Image 1 (cartoon, one colour):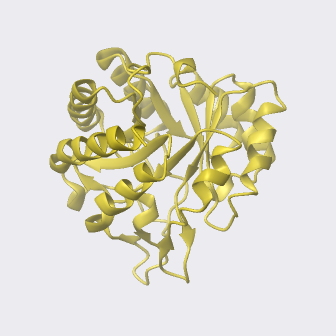
Image 2 (cartoon, rainbow, N blue to C red):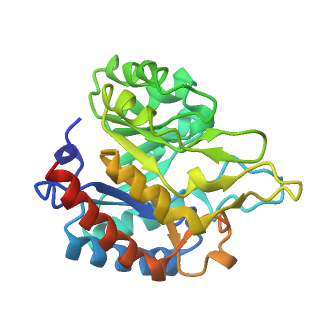
Length: 272
């Protein structure tokens, strides 16, 4: 998998990490455009290859009354507009095999959620679109087992896959990042560290997932030091009022300084 295989990706020769970044869910056009504009400007200045992230539908919810989306095609059309307006590639997650062909009409990367990465029919459907496939490692899976998910993509003739680590279950209500898994998974495909989901505190009694956004920079720095190829960071200009995953998202106001620090660390790592 070459980063340059992603349409519209920039700064691939900067020897930098790449970034998947945006809101958890597409809540509307104005919010998506506002976030995309800010992140695109920051990443262009810092020469970070950038993919805008936004879920067109949230199928995995703790409670039936949780926000799931504004309508599939409406959200996908917003993702396409973001791509056209800011000349950046986009990624969204799919949950059913039938989602693959639909989402592929609008976005450049199809993401397989961690809970669903063992679903062969879903992985194959994504791969058969010819799009880049982002395979999120199950919270319950070993790093070594992800080679089989990658192989499912490759067996369709699609070589464009990467792995994203989003932490491992640590008891019932916490996640932990095992950095030993990064070099293991990099043997199979480029590897991304999902910083914000790694800091979730799931299975809360309220039915709303908690999180530790105060630890975002700590985990992100450790990922860069340990040679991750990319970072996944969800961000919002008003996390407290976000309709999904507000408890672990990064406030957009803090993104520029965070990325500046990470780029500086990456430059040092590149000299070692």
